[in-house]
Figure 1 (cartoon, rainbow, N blue to C red):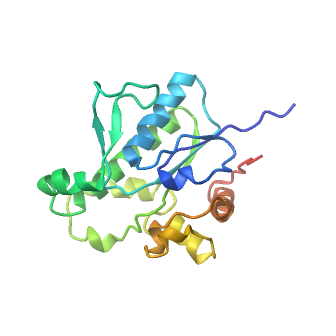
Figure 2: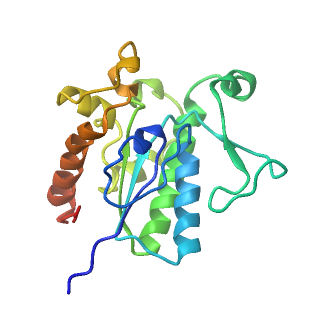
Length: 216
């Protein structure tokens, strides 16, 4: 008897709208990349279940979390609540004058999280879903040699060459009407459009990792 592959997806609202994802979907609207990492680890440890495959679409790397233990303390999520666009102006602008910190923290967290998944012998794919990363934004910045470790990892779809939302747009994916005035890379696409992304992930795993993802 064949054992069904357990798949786990964790992102923000871009993951939430993938309603037909054939597995566990921990995505939460407004969630940060650090939330995706934190709750994936928490879910795996709490449920004593190792997924066969973990999928992490990187959301806006400027997002962060706040902790209010007196307001909530719930399973998996704990006491954390999402940051808001107002928070960026209130807090982030006071401690950073560029995208340096956002990029560097993202690279560092990718390295540590992917190392943990590998130590757990869990297969995974990580990719940019909405940032449209561009090296011109960090050209000349020191302290980013760690990016080499990200780029050497084939389980991380090249961050500066692929963006999930942009790819769905280019492949004629359909987005929700209220997002029409936004750039394609930050639009929310209909559930059906995620078949485009799923096909890309499937082909990438096959060609780059010699793996076949069982979506059934």
